[in-house]
Image (cartoon, rainbow, N blue to C red; front, top):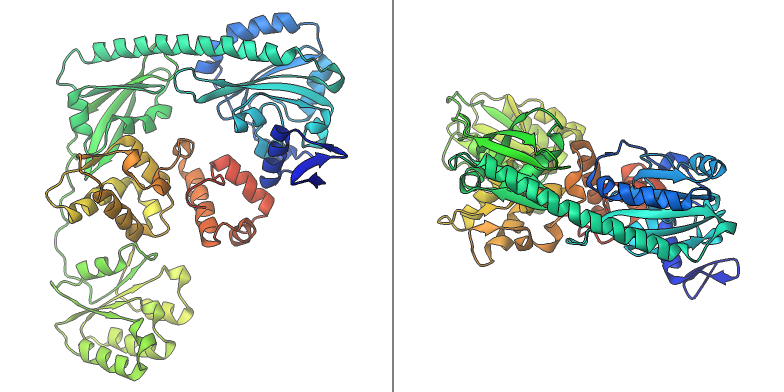
Length: 548
């Protein structure tokens, strides 16, 4: 029940921060009965910057709480458990039965209101006692949670929690947790400054020869010499951050990096000794750092089918393959607006000219009664060269698929979300179409944000974004702030792998198609609404996501 829109437990109205947490828990589809399957477990880094800073403070806290019936839990910035200690074996057993394990992800979207997930979500300290927990299995505990912020950036680095049985609640634990968090934040600051010094020294050593392109990245810092900035255009050195997770603790990481504008570079990286996430990147010129040569000309096929989603450039691709400077473009949709016989006559007149190239655009929209006419033209060796454009084969009707199968060559255009490596070059080319005399380049953060977008409108959508960008005052550099707000992405989604990014894009696209109706989106995706909420939480698709 609720009073005035505020959730309540029995006859008692929940405190505002707890009521807000309950609302979020319901939004995420969390049920009062704990679902252990929703708690994912993954490996965590015991030598992370957070753990390095927190370890001495936690050791002191353990000494203070030894002999009590409390536990100490520490989660990282992803709300994943990186440290746990139990002063009572019985308490340890009961919490482990609920999934409180090393590496467990204990966000609100998975276990509802709790002293790790709720401070992580609200960015505020919280006390949760007994019945204030959303999940029934947690109502036997009292918890004190406090977010740990980076003193310089304000970013959430983790959450500290002290938990005990409900009858063991202690009003002094709130101030205790606050003091301990303050000590951890101070050590995080000192560690950051020490890391900065190591990174700067590594940069100085690596740039002994000024002509060698070098960048050093770690935390929120980027050091790069002029040679590196020049080599990485049209991107910028922060693009190298996408490679950081692949650099091993020991040894050398060697790869190739596409930076846009048709440029591919050879990159060699190794860790900075004494830092948790720093690495030195050396950029080398590559024989393939120029556009690939055009393939040798071959005799074009007499009939071509170009398939792809709307906006992938089907018509442009068909025109490019026509073999003539100005092919005739005939729109199948016109047959829906005019008398079919008049359209059929015009089509027959065009294909009767053997030296003509005809692009029949959107053949999938053609009335079924006119499809035999297209089939006859494809089978007639004396007719004009015919190029058809259509939706992907799995979206064709059987009648259209039968016509498409008669084409001598098929070209399938991938959607933009599957061509993210090409996105920088395409975006720059679109900007130059607007202003040919300009030579813009994107920063790494801007490119990373564009890569997180699902691009349901494909090239058409990207061109609309680039038109917006081109209207801004020209500086030569396009940063995150110059992108339209809906395309600025988030730091969370930039860390997703290819499979997770594809899943996120599918969810965002379904939500957009359903105008934000999550029940309809879940049905479209073939999953339950509860599962949808959980995947939204895991993949960083929130209610304030620009595409919702």
